[in-house]
Length: 447
Image (tube, rainbow, N blue to C red):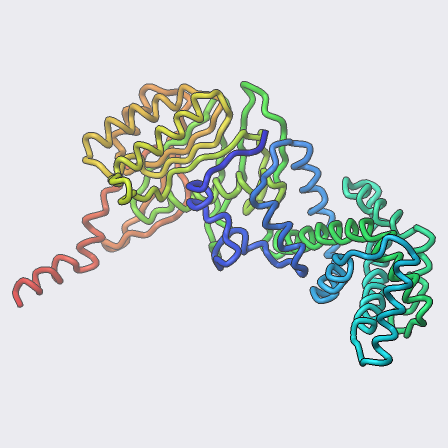
């Protein structure tokens, strides 16, 4: 079963987005090849759901990170190799001979360029093979204890074929006689075409590993350790998690387990609630990819999926108000939770689209109902602190934490550090006054 998320969750956390400069995908997209970029995009759309596979990928990334390995070829070399190997060759040596000789004759009598294109393509591919073979030979000499070693061995076996060894004996810059052009063209386009395409795919994998591990090294991200989900032992334990897109972000510890599977979060506007919830959601998603996370450390049980409700829009086409859109989102998540899956659920300010009394009643009722499901992990935030006080008296499996606000000469300052308890801050009106909004309005009225 795949790790399940939906578009709302991906948008809330700003996960995908090849052309969005602030997306999480874009943070890691420093690949050097077009194929590597495509593979990275595929990984972002298909997080893993098996602890062994997650830990294997993170182990490979850690290997590349520790050794600061550089990608061996340029983007242009990859594209030239892909273009040459992407064309079909003749099925037989006789067919290859006929094709090449005909192009050679056309070059002589009519200045045709097709022969030169094939000749130069072979030389370019020989140079590419030299660089890739040297890279994987060096890489393989250090990989005996790592899960990627079997893949490295596969590449070495491909290049160890007698006819490819003959090609590797050629100098990439040497001009090739007609007989060799015929022979090598047949070998590359027919005999070994699929094997060399496989080498390209593996090279794209290493491109991703190098790019992602470099980000982890430069930003001091950590690798999460995954364990299979066991009922009654579910946990998400993140040490000093922070938002990967914020420079100088303040970090916090977040732990959810079977005994305390819900965090009830309060705090003033701008105190850090939404940022923390997004930080946790992003860490959970990246951890299920086997990617490094913005934290000092993380251990988690593999989840079935994750759903968030952070920026729920109204739907004018269907005539849905903001409140009704929120209700439908909660219903959608409730249906998933009700199927017994172990999920991560993140709700930012439940029912903020309705009046305070209804929001209070709904927040208490829905939060209490969700809390009965111990397989899933929940983070719920609200400004309605009275809801937290009611729930605190009834549910031992809820953690109540808040972001404090410190007043300095009437100006709020935010620590962005979690504390246990429920916020009592009431600074919204103070901020409005400090911004001079009332004076502006009165000034306009006087005018």
